[in-house]
Amino acid sequence: MSGCNWLRKREIKARTLRAFKQACQEAGIAEHPGGKCPTAGCNCEDLADQIEARAIAIIEAELGHPLPEVTP
Image (cartoon, rainbow, N blue to C red; front, side, top):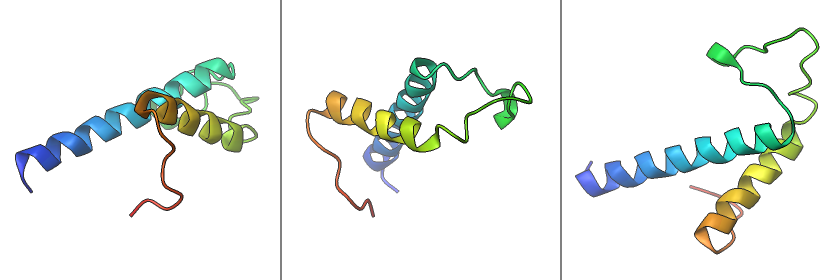
């Protein structure tokens, strides 16, 4: 893997994580240390589709164009 490709993948991963964190914050979902729900009544699974849609919208706004329907 070339250095440029590695940096691009790293940038994409960072952008994706930031978008999901922002979407979770906007929906009022608390941080999930270690990937575990912080409380027994956490409703993160109920909001999964909403969070994903918002994260995609955040990324598309940053890029200035829509993401492709299918990503290879």
